[in-house]
Image 1: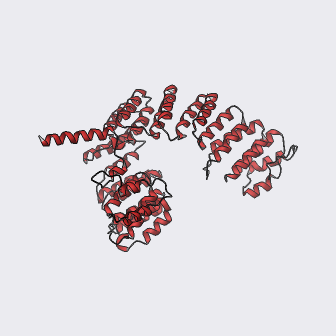
Image 2: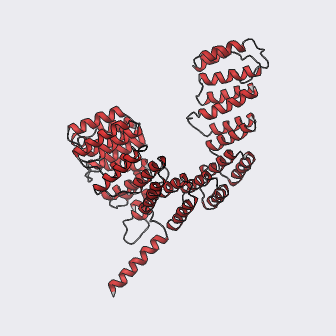
Image 3: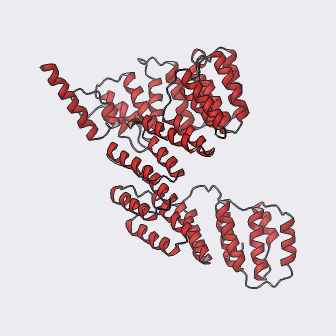
Length: 508
């Protein structure tokens, strides 16, 4: 009777946990059997802002006379890495290295190295590795961590050199280093090297799930080859996961094998669990590629019943899929739902709706929608203002487009040049012969460090269209460190015979 009652109580507790969603990271790391709120794990995980120090928390904990055990901190570091809070995780690792009572293993140093790379960059990670004691530096785990860093940075020569050195010293006893090399070659498009790595791997160790998932991704344009890889995976007794079937679905979709696509998507859905939450968005996107709105809505409802709250990324995925299927009213309703339940004000979500208005040519709707965002207190992002620039370019309002771009660029510390928007703006300015606008745009681009020969040629073409002669072009190009090409010389010569007209106040 007592055992039956205990079983019922345990089941009841499990149901209550599911009903209230997954346990928070802090609860998972609680070491207080009484369920108290003050644990070291909770204190560390409450450090949301990077400027706050994990070392201060650890020091105060010890000053209170409370013990700290290494396994506790390992769990906290693992949780922080999972949530991409690398700075605090690194601070904990550094604190651990100076504690006399902590015996650090090669795996601890491998995690430490990875965090150094993420927080301080590759050069610091290499120095960290060089400064390690010889017995630690010569371990597979630390070498593999450095190899991973080289691969993430796309440094093929360094990765290949280290991999060879590891192989020569017998430091490759599992599939992980091979998987890193597979990832490197697939990312760089060197697919011809994949079979070579696979052969070496099979000769020295056994492929694992990640090996096969990477191998399948290398078969993107070869459905038959992907099928053979999958069959070998099954023969080796390796259980596929949702990523396996997602990769197969993409390959079969590209090959037009719809029956196999639907099979792969069905298997994928069966293999997604609560902990594989990202798989649901992938599944929705793949159904959207098949224009299967019924399946998209069914998966979304399944997510609703599984999780207590949808994330911004999940709303973005669903809205994008509905927009792709031209289900505009449903997409707008989904946006309104997000707006009512999310307090993040993430502009990436409304940007999806703005983009749909642009594609349909609904410029007035886009402008009204922007005003709605501003009233709701949602701060437009760089992308929001770029989208609105396209709206005004379509209406031949170059002045308003430039105003939007000025606001867009003000959002950035460093600009990754968007040549598409630059060309679109100059094309419109040239068509209108808007010399003042071209000069203003040139100044804006100069302020973000993007002045090229092509940019000056666009300005010169605008002058030619307006029938006006530009002033001190050669001097300005020299000052900006921009070279002339044949078109530049032709345009300068062609415009030198035109009238000067009004001198722009922007010329400096």
